[in-house]
Length: 124
Ligand SMILES: [Cu+2]
Image (cartoon, rainbow, N blue to C red; front, side):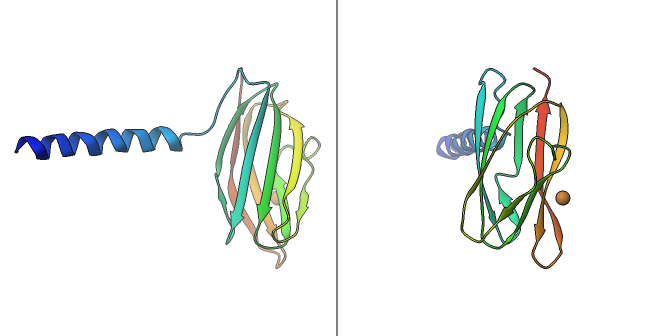
């Protein structure tokens, strides 16, 4: 392989690992508060993989492109299901009190329940 092709391949590999690093779940046990900015478009959420630690205060800001209900399963008391209007952002603030993996669902106006993502709460 010519030298320039080798360095191009190395550059691609480096770029690939940088992209992989960016797509790993956000997770910071040392941060007492953590904010997630979520956007729901065509019933898909970005980002969809959220991570935090027990004891952290979480602020979720969520905006959807249609009316529905944002529901974090397993955290119904701390983060009650929140009704969303199209294009209007809502903020949910709660403390992560339980570890585990919790499904985030969108209950759409037409009755469809769509799994949007997962919140992982780790032990500190
Ligand atoms: Cu639900």
